[in-house]
Length: 212
Image (cartoon, rainbow, N blue to C red):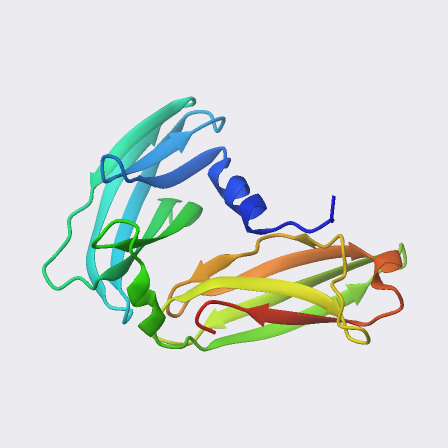
């Protein structure tokens, strides 16, 4: 009713992918869930465990064949000695080198205890923004981000506001939002909104995050 797609929206969007890779914390395994993607063969599931300093301390791959309306357990997680109190899981599901699904989790040695995140280093995320106003009264744009730091950039939020009044432009249609980026990762997010909703403002992008 308030026209804003918040974090729960994008979490549901991620979880409802037709073909999805996820962590099952009850069994501590990585799974490939196929809701409605048909038969998918020749897939590769990959998981990396990363310390808070960005060091990859464990990783593993597994070949997967996935069938519609199925959940395939493919990798059992292992935790090496020296893992940080809070660490991250980065998951990829690929086919012939193309990423079909990815996922990211924050985990603690003590389940649910993420207090150590308070000491994570700041991430350096560079951005490039491009907007275009169409003759049909629809604005489109892209935000290209690059994490140039050695640590993950956590819970990045993109927020398009009016340059004149600083108020959110709503409704705003983001291709993705409230996401995290690995060291060196690049990502481009698409945008769309209507001229009538700018209220005479030129748009600008505010970017925030847990460790930005």
